Image 1: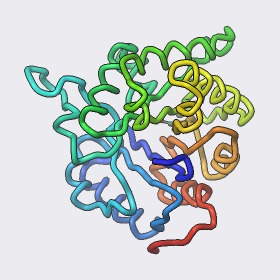
Image 2: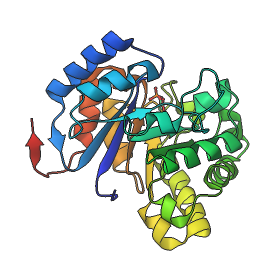
Image 3: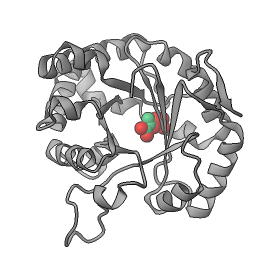
Length: 260
Ligand code: PEP
């Protein structure tokens, strides 16, 4: 997918049961316009993914999982593989900071999961970002470098075309602390320059990079206007239909509305 199309992902985290998720999707479907310039992706609880996939109009929304397991099949109690999710979801969040920090996911885990998503035709959204203490120590770019190199090891140039990077400073997630657009621009420049180093200038130009971290309806436009930002990963505000729709609207340009 080209960078001309903005990507807005709503991460519902561990909120809404199956019934509530279905009702919320219904509500959103009434108010989100189908447009060619924005792709709207919903990441509900895993429990609701299959039922929502039957309810959804795929021209209006795509689905993501918040996590997956990297082995395809086998004795891995409690896990769900990319192979099982193939055809149900289009995207998978990989290495979200809550996975890294609450569930001790390593760069090796994210690398395996990125690979599993790619081989099962699911777009991996590799989430990277520094903690508050890493930021205070001036280590932001080193952390981004390590998480990128760790997560993308073994990804070929061809495979990279299906990878999306989400820059999510950990200290800005769920905290209401806003990263300054200028700092986001610097971090994304560092990400693209690392991609250039690994895959060359064309890849650095074409890879999609999202920003995430306490994005709200009133801050979305500033981030979307920030150099290098191709969309947003939205947590808390995606659970409020009004706020989420306002965020989506900020991503529209003047292209034609396909369906109200
Ligand atoms: C997220 O879950 O990736 C996120 C950015 O959450 P929030 O918008 O609530 O900070």
